[in-house]
Image (cartoon, rainbow, N blue to C red; front, side, top):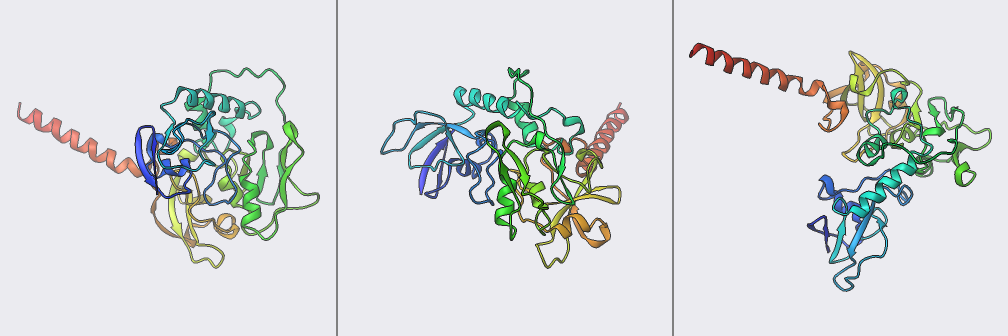
Length: 326
């Protein structure tokens, strides 16, 4: 076990734990943001640089600070390590630069993007973004392409986090897509004359942190905050069958895996559950999906309407009692 202090909070974690996961074991504001790291995908992390932190003390044995900011998703803790995240001006300034860099080519088309309202880059841009970009060159643009009969790729929005390629590598029998070209010309694409048609390809949509990969069966169906997310399950021979149904009235607009507080899927689901089971009668609905109150999805969320109504009734009774007492 190793003791590490992050933003003044001392915790003890097993040896080999990364700084990011150590912070996640505590939760709250001390957790660095992450756009490319995905705990369930081996080899992910170290690409987006949004999780940079400052190590002011390397360890008890060697208290010297690390000379540069380090990616918390790739740096293991050491006993006696002291880390600064939100308490370091250097980290916050570097994070602003990273966000500015990610937005160089990423179009600000949130008003028409299906990912709006549950986009990690939106949250990151709101918290750390600058008012204007200093970039003056022409943005790179790509044609929208179908990389499967159910998946649309908007390469303009891609931040090259590589998560979708890890899904193809680790969840399917044969990966048919990857990164082609180099530098500013790098892009996600399928191999020549290949189509992504495996049973777990839809998980590429769930792991994408931006709106680069979208569900063609649910495109432009509804804003996410107008839907009712419901936990549901069914007996499935290919996956766990545990999903979230995003409903509008009694209609199922889309089906996704269940994600934790860091936007990572708890259990990957198959394409049959995701694309072919859009009838609510085919599911056992467990109840409303709990949504973090900080999320725009919960802004007028039906899960809290009962609480709001009860508060209003209680307030009205208090007013009535005061009036009756004169």
